[in-house]
Image (tube, rainbow, N blue to C red):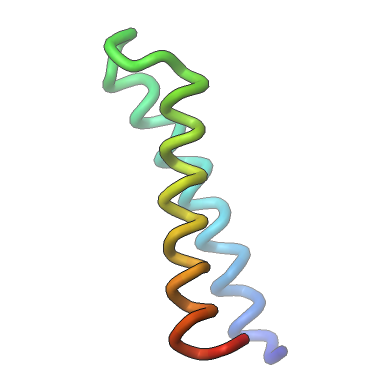
Length: 57
């Protein structure tokens, strides 16, 4: 793995956690926090699954 690719993966992880906190605050109790976390992780899972299917890695 190249250093640039590893940095991009790390940045995307920070971005996911940051948006989770932002969306939790913006929902203001309409969506329970654990459900919002599960939805965020579900989106990340689907993105990685699509990468695995298309690239095979």
